[in-house]
Amino acid sequence: MTSDPEVPRLRAVTRSLAGIPDLLSLADPQRPMLWHRDDRGSVGLGEVLRLGFRGPNRFRDAAEHWRRLAAAAEIDDPVGLPGTGLVALGAFAFDDRSTAESVLVVPRLVVARHRDAAWITEISRVDEAGGSEITGVEAPGVEVPGAEAPGSPARSSAPELPAAAAPGEWRGTAFAPRALPHGSGRSTRDSVDAYISGVHEAVERITRGEAEKIVLARQIEGRVEAGADLRVPLRRLAERYLDCWTFAVDGLVGASPETLIRSTGGAVSARVLAGTRARHDDDPQRDARARAQLLTSAKEQHEHAFAVQSVVTALSPHVRDLRTSEEPFPLRLPNVWHLATDLGATLDELSSAIELVGALHPTAAVAGTPTAAAVESIAELEPFDRGRYSGAVGWIDAAGDGEWVIALRCAQLGEPAADGSRPIVASAGGGIVAGSDPEHELGETVSKLRPITEAFAE
Ligand SMILES: C=C(O[C@H]1C=CC=C(C(=O)O)[C@@H]1O)C(=O)O
Image (cartoon, rainbow, N blue to C red; front, side, top):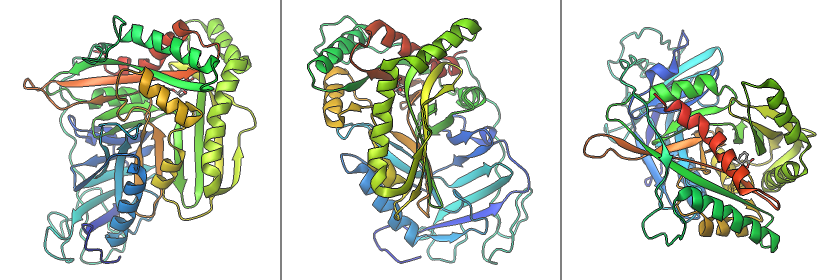
C-alpha cells in the first residue's frame, strides 16, 4: 500500500465461504452486476466507486488509474486467488469517438466462486469513514453463517453474505429493428435496408482494395418493463450458453463466446472467433453440413485468419511462448457454429489485463483489416454509435489479473423512462470479405441475436 493523494483509498476484506452460493440469485434484479461461466464467476452488489473514461486513451487511462488505486488500497485477503481482494468490473466502448462511457465499477460486495472455492469480499472507502481503522463491514464481530475468517487480522470482521432478493416479475421483451437515428441522412427505408446497403458498400470498398475485411453490425431495440427481474434473462443465458461468459455490467448484458484476454498469475490465454454458420438443432444432417461447410470454406478460413493474425500481432510484444491451436476448430454454441482458435502465452512484462485489452482492441473479429481503414468504414457505413457492443467487458483485480471478453451477443439497457420501463438495444454483426452475400450476412446477424432475443422472450 502506498499513499497517493489523488486516488481514493479503498479497503477490501475477503473471506472464504464454507458453501457454494447460487450467484445469480444474489444479483440485484434491476441493476445486476454479474460475471459467470459454469462453475466460475462473481456477482457484485452496490457500488463503492465508479470510474468513467472516454476517448482514444480510455484503456490506458483506466489501466493507470486502476494501478494507482490498487497500490493505495488496503487489502486483507487470506484467500489469495485471482479475483479475490480488490476487484472492479468494467465495460469499454468500441470506438474512440463513442459517446458511451467506458466504466470500471468497484462493487461494495462481491460474492464469487471458482470451482470448489467460494469467497466474499467487502469493499469500502477508507477516507469516507475517517481513517484506516475502519472495517467497512457491518456488525463487527458478528459470526456470519457461511463465512469463515481463516486466520485473519483481528480488526477485520467477516463480511456478511446477503440474502437473495425475492423473485420478481418477468413478462418478456419483444425486439424490432432499431429505428434509423433521426437525421442519419439515409435513403434506405429502415435499419435492415441500411444494413444490406452497408454490406454492399463494404464489399465494393473491399473490391476496390480499400480494406480486406470490414465487420458491419446492425441493431434491434425493445423495452424492458418497469420492475422486470433481469435475473430471468441472465439465468437463461448462463444455463444455455455454457461455453460463454454471461455478463451484466452497467446495463450491458449478454453471453459472449470470445475471450479477448484472460491473464492470471502470468499465464495468458485468448479465444479468437471468426467464421460462422447457423445451427440447425432440429435437423442433425443439415447441422452437420453447416459445420462441414464452415470448416472447408476458403472464405471463412480467410476471414478467420485475419482475426487470429490481429491478435497474434497485438499480443506478441507483451508475451513469450505464444502458441495457438494448430487449425481452427468448430465451436458449437446453441445458436451458431464458429471457427475458433485458442491462444496461450506467458506474460513477458507487468502488463495488467486492461493494458492487454487496450493493446488488442479492436481485433479483426469486430473491426476488420487493416484496422484503421475498417474502423473508418464502420463509422461511415453503420448508422449508429456502437457504444459498448464489440468493446470489452470483464474484471480486473489488484494484481492486474483479469478476464475480458469481447462484448458480443449482448444488449445495452438504458435509463428508465417516466413509466419505469427501460430501453434496450441489442447489436450483432459479421465480417464482410470479398464475395460476402448481404442476405447471408443478414441471416447471420439473426442467428447471432438469438441469445438475446430468446433470453429476453416471455
Ligand atoms: C461481430 C460479431 O461476431 C464476430 C465474432 C465471431 C464471428 C464473427 C463472424 O463470423 O463474422 C464476427 O467476427 C457479433 O457477434 O456481433
